[in-house]
Length: 436
Image 1 (cartoon, rainbow, N blue to C red):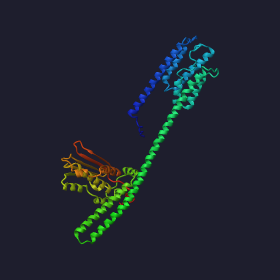
Image 2: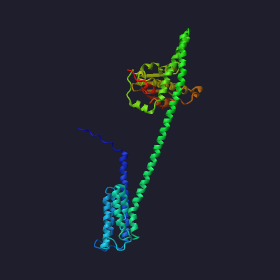
Image 3: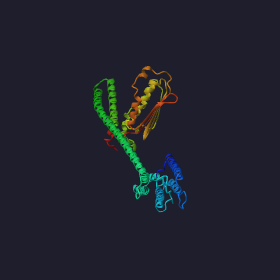
Image 4: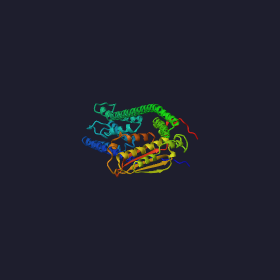
């Protein structure tokens, strides 16, 4: 037995909007019926009464019948048009065979068609197919203009009341459609211009990334090479230790530079692919990079220890394992904690700081919160810096597919919260297939 999935249900606003629109249109039709009914009453009462067996006000009865039928023109436009055509045809036939039967011999108004015909033909054009609408309108125009007995008082009025309203409606619809097409074309051109600007920025970013990679890699590689040679050739243990430290820091900078250049070369489509793709297996060297290289990434615990050694109380709460993260994400976490601790030292003197790290297989959550400052900040520290630390940090987090929020807390402290994925596929990592 097959299961049929129901289609999307209309929202409450759409249902209410359709209901109110139908009620508004019904109220409009009712107002038109009242207006045309009063107009017919006024005209018929000011004209000579009919003299046939149908009664002295047979013309008024027929007009009112057509007026009332307009209330159903939204659902049955052809039926209402047929009623108007039948009344008009009967009036013309009675004038030829029995004058005064259905209309006065000397009417105050020369119009043969019901006066509400203009409303009926408008709904015909809007609701029926062009072939059907134009055929009915042509029939009404022929009956109303009496081409077999043309008259300057009947023919122009009959043509204007049947052909004039559809022409105006078609013109307004064509103008509305043209304006909509022009609006859509302008929006499409604006989107294309935005995409071209994004593409130009991406190309410039890739060019700058390649140039930065070439320049810095050359200098850093020379520094690592000379430091390694100095560590081997020197007999002084202190010199060898310093050379080894320089070599290790240079190698770490090269790794971070490679990851950052890879991130800069990653497009938005690549990030979408990362969000939709499966996470790498633990210990693999796929998009997340080599798992073993996580030990070369700076540990945020080092930053906490440095702050504690400087007399700044910092509480570290870690949950999960760092091994699930790629080096790029690990360095971003290190940078977030570093920026948060630096800002706390500058602007929240004496405050207590809490660092929370939640490592998961699909990402990591970073929370750094400091209490309100207990004393005035140091003027030199507070005045240092460019003021672009958080904005640059947010841009870096967004580049790797994460999100960052920073702002004051209700008690007067400050909070930085970031959520990052476990890895980000970059051009560098995609060029090197994973080894199992």
